Image (cartoon, rainbow, N blue to C red; front, side, top):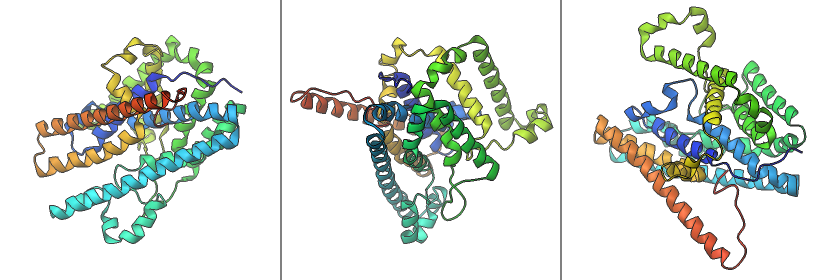
Length: 385
């Protein structure tokens, strides 16, 4: 079996925390601050970062458990985590529906329900609630957690294979991705359509993250850091940025060859277009090259807020969904000017940091309390995986 890393990489927490902030900003409609997010400068966005790191950390935690304690114990822990995320999703769904319904009724503005994709729930709450429990009905901004739940549910056998035949495991993931693309396989959604994040496609990043965690990064580390790969990644990012510029400056579209445009578009997010995958890989190459594992700044107070948010990803993601709608409400009812957009964006990130810091503080005092009675044990997963 390949060696399982034992030391937590703070870079994962840093980039996952940053991804949570970017997702929050992107969820606020017509938000000028969202122009700082990566989706405006390339083909991928923060979702790719979040899914990849989730796969990496899941393998980091449960790979060691499977190696030391066997398949049954590891599978039980993975499924327990999937259940925890499912409960969090249902709790988030319930409060989110109440929040939107209350605002829509109180301010006599049904557009809130329509914009957030909950109009069907208000018409048939009984039927829609059952579909939500089955993960088929998902309001706006609530598509990531169901994806994570499904990926975790099928993760135990993949870890088992990954620990024994890592190359075969990676091939299986790529094959599932290719078949999903070729035959248009996806899960149905309610009341119509399919999942916004096709799990048969997005498992590629999740599984690749797991592969990297369980020895894959060691095998390809020298290749990724080679000058020609770094140069190729930079050139691809520049090319992507040039293409994206034509989306905002229509006259520049004439510089994009017609044959290239016909081959390239649409760049499908639902099915994780290969151009999005390549863009994420290019960003990852630069991150690995210029942010070493033991970079002193990772423990600096300047980056600590993002690291702490990344260590409490499930809770902070749920909070971000609430805050994004609250920001949308404030902009719709009070003011949609740039000062308000900046205010709600900064306030939301500050609240996310404060919540993560509070959870870390509680975890520390609970650890001290238990440590006074017994020998403390390390928690490599933090509060989420």
